[in-house]
Figure 1 (cartoon, rainbow, N blue to C red):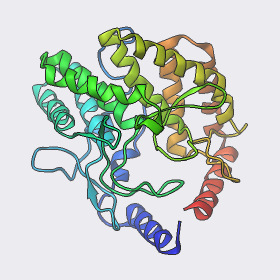
Figure 2: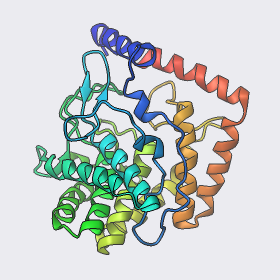
Figure 3: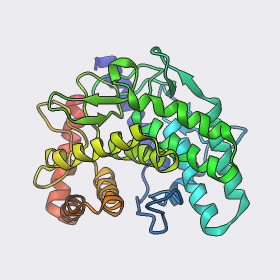
Figure 4: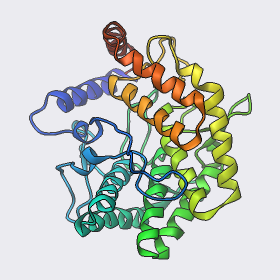
Length: 326
C-alpha cells in the first residue's frame, strides 16, 4: 500500500473508531452468539442470532436498506453481507415473535438482493461491493466474495420458504453457480495444491483463506443443499468440511487463532471480535456435524480468549501487524 493510500486508510480508521457519529463498526462488532433455536437438519432460524445486527440504528436508504458509513474516501455504502445479516437477524426475530414488522424488514432485504444480483466478468451472478477496500492488497470496485454469496443465499432461501415466491429461489440458484467455479473462472472456490477446497472471502492472489468468511459461506452451501437436495452442493459441503478438519490446526498459534492464512512474515492474528466469532462458528459447526474436532477447537480457542496474557499479547501483536501491512 502506497503512502497516500496508507494515509487515507489510517485517517478512515481513526474516524471510524473515534469520530462523533457512528461508523460501520457499529454494525459489525457486537457480541456473536449461537442461536439455540436454530434448526439443524431443515431450514429454520439462522444459526447465529444476529440480534445486534437487527438492532442496527442506521443510516438506511429510503427503502429501509442499511447503509454502512466507512468514513474517509469510502463514505456510506451498501454492503451485501451487512444487508443479508440484517435481514437474517429480523428473520430470527419474526420466527421468535411472529411480529410481521420483522418479516417485512426481512423481505425488503431479500428484494434488494434479488434486484442487485449482477453479472461479473466471467458471466456469473454475484453481489458486488461497489467500493475499494483495503486488505492484503487493495480490492478494486466492483468486487465479490464467497461470504456475500453464501449469506445472500441463506437469506433468499428463507424468503422463498416464507413466501413461495420463485424470484427468491431463482436468484439463489443463480448465486449458487459461483460456488461451482474456481476463482480464476469467476467463481469463489479455490482448490490448493493439496487438493483441499476453499471458499474465498476475498479473491486475491495468492488466496488467503479467511476463516470466518469460509465458514459463513459454507453455511450458505449447506442451506442450499437442505432446500434443493442438489448433489453438487452436497459434495461441496463435505469437501469443505474435510478442508476444515484437516486445516484448522493451521489457524492455531498456541495462544490465539489466525484470521487468515496469508503468507506474510507476520501472521494475521484474529482481533478479539473475530476470536469470539471463530469460537461461536465452531460451536455451530459441531452442532451441524457432530464432529468432535470442531468442539475441541471451540473450547481451546475459548480458553485462549479467557487468558488475560494471551489476550493482551494478541492485541499488541495485531496493532503491530496493522502498522506494517496497512
